[in-house]
Length: 440
Ligand SMILES: Nc1ncnc2c1ncn2[C@@H]1O[C@H](COP(=O)(O)OP(=O)(O)O)[C@@H](O)[C@H]1O
Ligand SMILES: [Mg+2]
Image 1 (spheres, rainbow, N blue to C red):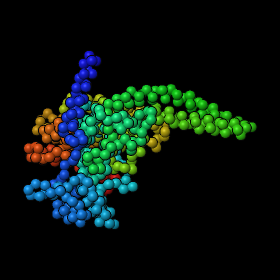
Image 2: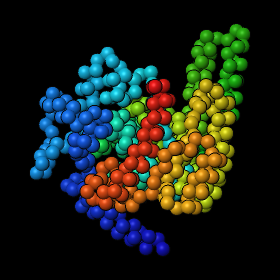
Image 3: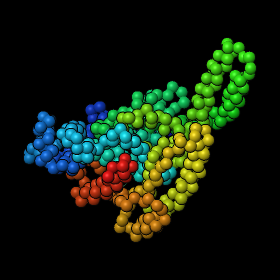
Image 4: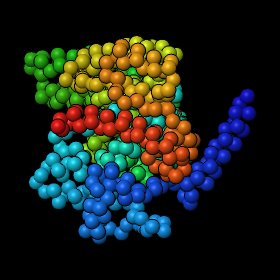
């Protein structure tokens, strides 16, 4: 069996690498199309005429395509125009923000984890479309791919298997030679959308996290006893100054070991700590999680401010979601109790929980029944649903989102309907982000 597996793996990997090469030549890199004036203007919330005037005023060279010489804007150019218009708005902060919506220093970064242990509930599809939508609106977004299968990374043009360990998300959360997340994050072909690559190395983390947590749990009492002993010794009368200095040094070492030990024991805080390194660089971090409630998903849900649970509205998926909720409750109660005890209650951040109905066939009666049930039983089911669409599936087949795909490749009506559904879902999430930032 192993011999066959090895041969099959080799054959499949090289075919996939060749496919990537042929799909995105010459460097097997994806690129983003340019946006026609009306579409670009729509993203900026201005008229096509004002967009053209602003581009001219800025002296940008806008590509003209086709016989009609119609202007097409790159996302970089759209973002340049955004910043230009925001600057022009001067002291009118609300107007400036309409052009350039990035958060200011008193608005916190928002971390969203797309979660559910059911595979196929459209976690990856949701994460990538949301990331691209927000980037198109002008936000700075980091997509964190926590799935060892790296599907979100693939969608963003990276072949996970070809990414060295050093350049993958794993390097930023591993237990030896950890790298700062900022060094690991890569730019994508989408301006303002960066990626921390998910890769098979992450599977190791599923093994190491519990391993180190257990060992650290065993070491902790010993270190605490040592600290208590040293504190006692310090209090003794007539202790020589040289001995006192030695004790202080030993105490410092013991505290450092204890803090290292706690960090390993509290494995679920590891991703949160890694995020601190890049916080200043982004407005939103989106975590795509694997289809399981393992250690990686736990780390994402602990780091997140918002849990976005995707549900395919079918009875069997609802049953699995009930189990997901039960397991999540148990895990989160454990995290909260452990953090409150070990670090203090101030380390616990309140989170929001939203449900998004995905792959929704709104012509199907059974699905409508499930959606009605979900809306009546759960709080915070998002108003908009992500409709099932052959356009999303077809674009997904060639590792594209609807935002990057060309409308002309689809039946126009099908494409428009799917895009409208995605925009409504993503717009609803953007509105939530704005309320968290306290914007009117
Ligand atoms: N709205 C949709 N319409 C049609 N197909 C969809 C839609 N959303 C997702 N899919 C397809 O469903 C499959 C599973 O989606 P994916 O995002 O990979 O799920 P997960 O990450 O939860 O496992 C993919 O093939 C994807 O292209
Ligand atoms: Mg996925």
